[in-house]
Length: 220
Image 1 (tube, helix red, strand yellow):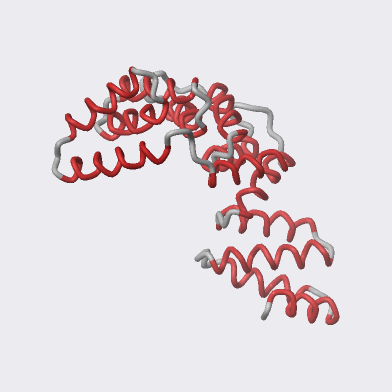
Image 2 (cartoon, one colour):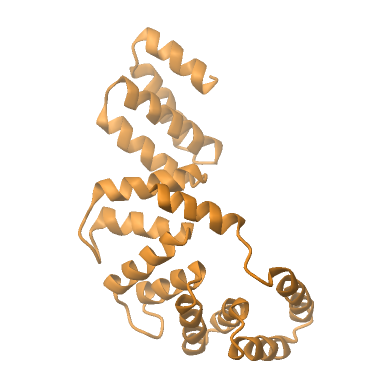
């Protein structure tokens, strides 16, 4: 998971070669899209993509996808995936997950989500956690699912924070209960309504000295 965390940080901070020039083209494209000149924008992206501009693969795919043209969207998401772009890998997995154009295939969805996760794609990491908890499309692995959830929790995914709280609360013991309370606190601060009551329940379960220490650490 340390490698995945490093990949997530790189994905959140990274900029590809030519990103500044392409950002300007995106700004121009958004202006045209606001004026409903979608065909002109798409034509520009297609030309860039066909000339091998990898920065154009994903915008081209998105326009087709949003128009419900999944065959064309698939082509450009696959190009982005083959170019090693995390979002492209994620969307190829999503096509297999939902059965868009290519047909549903959980095994291939997991394969591409893994590749996207290695590139730091948080959406892929979230779906992998679900897959490994359910055992659909892969062998059930609760330990690996928790590792993925722990990564998501660090990036303020409230559902992941809540789930980590649940795991640790069920594990029991003073240390786990304090950690569970911390995850519930973070989930509650991110809008998970049920988490606050469970945080307080964890604190009530602690011995007096540990409870005082936990309240100090949690700022409650």
